[in-house]
Structure formats: structure tokens, C-alpha cells
Image (tube, rainbow over all chains, first blue to last red):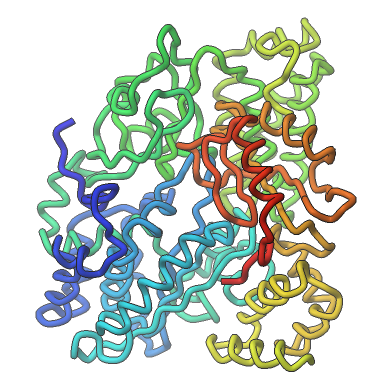
Length: 427
Length: 164
């Protein structure tokens, strides 16, 4: 595909963990430009005008999020969300250890825009290697004056603190992340108040995803108009899509939003010979499936929402016709069951019961009664929880139950999995 | 408080705007030294940040990478979520359990290996994947696992869960 990568430029060819290599490809020019010639408000306005939408999952306009902070003199915090754990998503991990200076530049620029003197980066506990790479890069950035007191001789001073997680998907939810940084259980807060008003330590706080922050220097360098001209008007810019599952070349692909699902499958090498698409999760484990007839669908926030699914984090998981839909749904529901923080009953109990029913079906012990419950239970779970985790239990299951109902019936009729009679896919 | 813990604890507390933020980093540090979060560390953490030991236990229990019981010198965590499942994680899990003779969240009687099936590790393009003492291994077939197992057995790992 004829598209110039923006935030993945040079990755895999150059050693972008070397600050001079990063500088040679234009690194830190945006930061210099902003600190010497732009007010914080101008940076916010530029990002607002670009219509950059958050790349972590929710797709909220970044500039708007920044502009919600009250001007009341309280200290402000920026938190970089590097707790990537959405099933099928592996882009932030690559950005963290592949191009740490780009992330640092994006963090400092964004910190300048919202006037934060302290920036936290919450790195998923499992990313030990990545946090070490980032720590080394941060030390160099301090030495070179890109972070710390009076950045590049300007009036802006900022510190970046690395905070490692300790194993909890839910800490990727922004208010759970704030609780976790405060040293508590990672339980999401009731909103409002939103973090912009009462966030970390009760102070005005912005939480931005790694990929979102990586785009900020490029928008400052090349202008909002350039960014907004890529892809659909209301959902512009490039996005890293993490493609995995049954494709020949799984990997991260930075693409302009607006390419079709089918093009993305082809970009990732297509299917194995003789296989057909059975289902695709376009936006991580929380998203409803799309199917072969949806391959022309545009990959962007609004087009996928119109298909009752979502772009989410960009975790694009391809399942071919050898995949058992009961096993796939079981794997995902079990994920949410495991990761529920337990505060809300529908999520805590619902996830558990659905996982048990799917486990029974896959093991050949399911009944018609289980199927009836699966068909109706969604209404009692979705929309009844504090945070989106509970709402993530049903979308994939509901979509494949609807589309491949016969396959679920066959598990009951056969009292077993028709795909792998001897060795179920789930151990 | 033991002097080394106190020194590190104070450093961590000084890093943050509020002391309790140092709690989890402190427990990570203790786990690196002791192999798991011991009752003594829980008491020390409570003292450090000014909450009760029961509160520390509740918080520690929330996080899957903080172990409240001794684990093996080698901790093998295999991804079981969808993208890895689609590429053979089920077979890999069966193979590992059979080779080690233990199940999910169990430790071999000689204290060498702990095995755990974990959720998505964000390495779905190189599935199935696992972590050995938090180091990634990619595209792990049963044959590759056998080779890794020989290497691990011959090695002397420093800590199953390094704090930094």
C-alpha cells in the first residue's frame, strides 16, 4: 500500500532507541518549535483542529479532553497509559521499546500543552524489557535537556515518573489507573467527576494512550491540516492496527484510517491457502465481530460504530473457518471474568456464569437451557456496570451467537466440539 | 523495619506526591528480594505508607504479579487468550503441563518451576507466546519449549520478578 508511515517510520530498520538516530529523522524538532514559538494554548488548538482521536480505545478527541481542565491554579497531571492488555493489541508495547524518544517527546509536548509539572507513565507490569528501555531513554532525555528543569532553556519544567503496574487489565481503564498509581486496588471510580476535574490525587488530570501521544509531535511539525487530510473527516489520521490470528503475516500495520477490512487482511498477507474468513474482531477483545460480508467496511471510528462494533484499540483478530466460535467466545469471556475487578455484580457474576456455560458447551456438557440463558443474559449485564469492562463481555459472544447459532446448537446436539473432537482448543 | 527495606522504601516514598503511591513499587522490590510478598514485607509496607497490614493484603491480592506464596525459581506464564489460542496455545499448555508434571498455578516439588496460564501478553503477532521470569519467548512450539526448558534448567536466574 502506498502510505508513508508516520509514527512507525524507521522502525525495524533504524535503532530509534539511540537519541541521535531519532534526532536525525526530525526528532525533538516539534518540541523545540513549541517551546520556542508556541503558547500552550496554541498547542492545544492545533491538536483540537487536527481532530486527533484517542488511540487507546474510546476514540475521544484529544484536544477536547485537554481543554476540559479547569483553570483554577491546582497542580495538573498528565498520565500516559501504557497498560496495554486488550486482547489482540500489541502496538503500545512496540512503540515503548521501539521508539521511546518519540513517546517522550509526545509526553513533554502534551505536558506543556496542559501545563503539567509531573507526568506519569503507567507501564504494564509484564513489560519489564520495555520499561528498562524506556528508563534508559528517559535518563538520556534528561541529560540532553528534553525533560527536567527548564526544558531546552524555556520556562517549562517537567518530571516524568515511571510507575510499573503489577498485573491487572482493568488498570488500563483511566480511573482504575489513577487508583493504582495512588497505591490502591485498581477499581474504577464512579464518574462524574471526570479525571479532568478530580483525577490523580484529586487534581485535574489527563490520561492519554501511548499511540495518541506519539502522534502529537507530528501534528505540531506538519500541522493540523495535514493530519486532518488523512482518512475520513471525522475520524482522521493514521492508526496502528495490530493484526493477529489466521493471517500469513501477523504484525503491526500503520495505515490511514478509512482503508477497508479486506485491504487490511491482504496487507497482513491474506489467509492461509484454502481458508475462508469466519469472523474478525476489528477492535480488540471487547469488540463485536464482523464477517466475510463486511470486508468492504471502512476501518475508522464511525464506520465500525455504525456496524455495531468498534475500532477500539485496533486489535484486529482474524479467525478462519477452522475456528470454533464457542471456543473463541469462551476464551474471551474467560478473559473478562478473570480481569473483572469485582465491584459490580453484573460484571463479576455475569462473566463467571457465562464463562462456565461456554466451558460446558465446549466440553460437551452443555444444554439447551444454557443456550437460552446465553441468548437473554446480555441485557442484564451490558450497561449496568461502573466501567466498560462489564460491557465488553457480551459484544463478541452476542455477534457470533447470532451469526453462527447452529454451531452453538451443534455443541449441544453432539455433546462435544465438532471442530476438535479429541483435543479441544482450550486446555 | 529491616535497614535495606527502609532505605529503599524511603526513596520510593520521596518519588511520589503521596506516600501510598510507593506501596506497590515497594512490594515489587520486596518480592524481588524474597521471591514473593512475605507477611513480614506486608507489615513493613503498612508501616512505610501508614495503612494497616490488612489494607496492604487487600491491595496486594488485587494484582496478579504479586505472589502471596513462594513461587519457583523459574516462573513460566503462557498466554491463553484468543490470538494465542488460534495459533496453538492449547497444545502448548498441555505439553508444558505434561513436561513439568504440574497444573495451572502449581509449583514443582523441587521448587524449580511454577506454571501459570495468563491472559493476553500483547505479543499476538508471535503467537503462541510465553514469559519466563517476565522475559518474552515468541512462536513457542512444543519442540521450542523443550529446548527452552533445557536452557532454563542450566541457568541460575537472579529473580523471578525483578522490580526494575
